[in-house]
Length: 70
Image 1 (cartoon, rainbow, N blue to C red):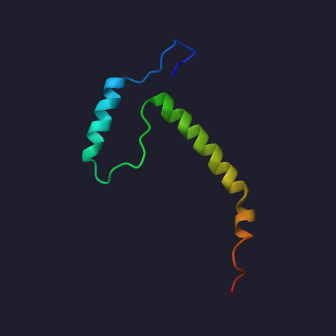
Image 2 (image 1 turned 180 degrees about the vertical axis):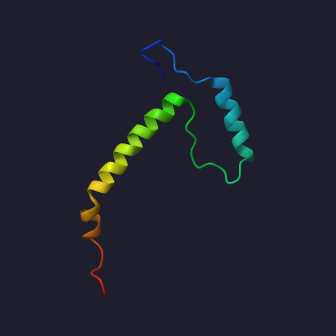
Image 3 (image 1 turned 180 degrees about the horizontal axis):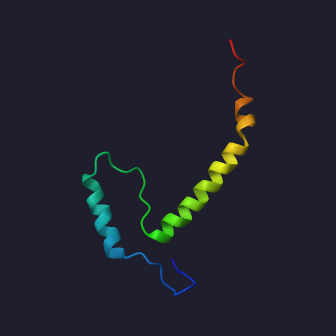
């Protein structure tokens, strides 16, 4: 991926490969790995937007529950 500021992403492919290999011995094993600060920042931005969207639809989600006592 390219960073418009300098043309290169800040992630080091060798370090990324090492972290992937090391993850084999991690308990519990990670479900997902975000490698690189640029990827992490982008991922968190997207996830925060999704959480905000989900929270704004709380009433809609609850409106599909069974009524209390049923």
